[in-house]
Length: 240
Image (cartoon, rainbow, N blue to C red; front, side, top):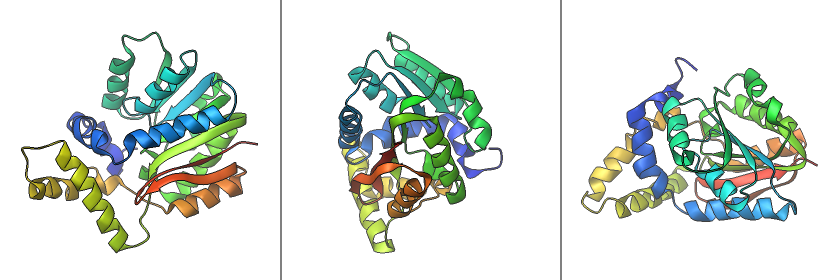
């Protein structure tokens, strides 16, 4: 989306900093993936096809394919460097993966993935929060239509804090985790970088309670926030 603040994600240097440092420092990152896999297992049937929206370097897709090696994955991202990182991740694996370089800001994006659907599962990791709230809701409706009946949507996402005080506690937690990965750098330096990171302006955060309500209104069942720590949440629902 030319002119939008999330254009920063097309910059190789920003993507490299995120993948090499920030992504690995996300609090409870492994637990978030574990919850995603538990929800997929609870469907009671193998995952044959899935869509990873805003796939980044394919970390969620890799976890799914490790559990369901026979699945076919479609990874969608509008960032060329992210798609390249995902291609590199799967370059030496026998996984059945398709890469789609597409911007899901316009509703027409579904035309690039419909031919491989409907999907047993759709996942997204730290991506949809870059869209305005009206567009978030539109995307959720589009994902509902792309799902097979009984399929599930799972969003591992950055959501809004209930207050400024809660947001400050979240920031302290994240900075602490960043510090663990950079033992030679002072906490003050890491905090300065965190608060002035170039991708921050691309965040458009919404409360998880509101987003769950949108999912219910669209028609999703079993909607819930399955895991949450401050501004990091795993939520979603199934298509009946």
